Length: 299
Image (tube, rainbow, N blue to C red; front, side):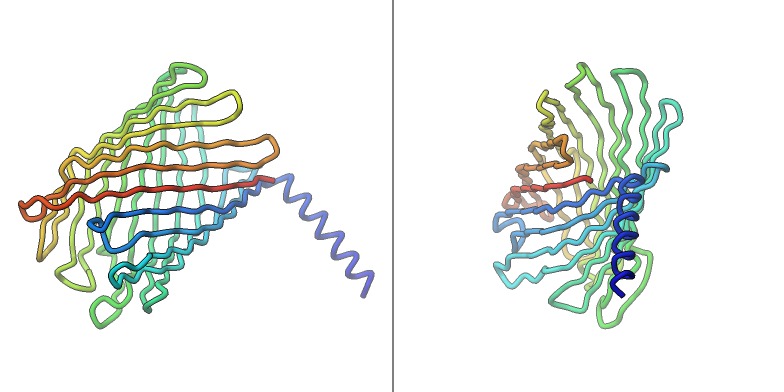
């Protein structure tokens, strides 16, 4: 028995060493916090997450798993605590100056205060094209379907009627080895035809202009301030209300740092202000402050 245990330990160590030669493994933890004013909705939200990513060296494939606990701090009876699981699979291809980075994500949400479970399928056919050493085209696309939102009304339904997409297309100009600017257009569209309450079934459509500046410092720190300005936003309900956003703006900064020993730190923060109009009448602004911090280690 002792020899068997020693042999098993030896084979396990050899297998782990072989895996490290063939796969880059990244693990990490992160935290997100959204602070809303009372007019935004009835809760502030915090998210605690842990992730593990395997990036294969010999062929263009990576996979990632993430677990998140979403906690909604109740201010007026709001219930929103949720366990969220994400399973991701992606690849990367280059053909000359053309790049293709497809991703698939299975997202499962499990509400803690109810029997509701949400399952979503997200497809990301991201691609880009490099015109020259300075100019490049980027496309960050996401198409999502949610075939199963349980317990709508008094019975569980499984349909493909709910649909969601985020599409961003833009240009990046690199004017130095360590500096670049990006300009893009963004559209978000969401359709919820089969809500648990008919009057809550709605469609949401938003168009934005996005601007960003990137700066890489000699010490390995990357800083990218950004602005997202809404040109048009409208939410239409089948019954009850129509909401228009009047000049929503989001202003913030992203940062990242990767050390030579495999340790990485990243973060994002922004402030968002959204004047609103409901059925033709001005409403109180919706404000949001967001903070995200994460630590990764690659070995």
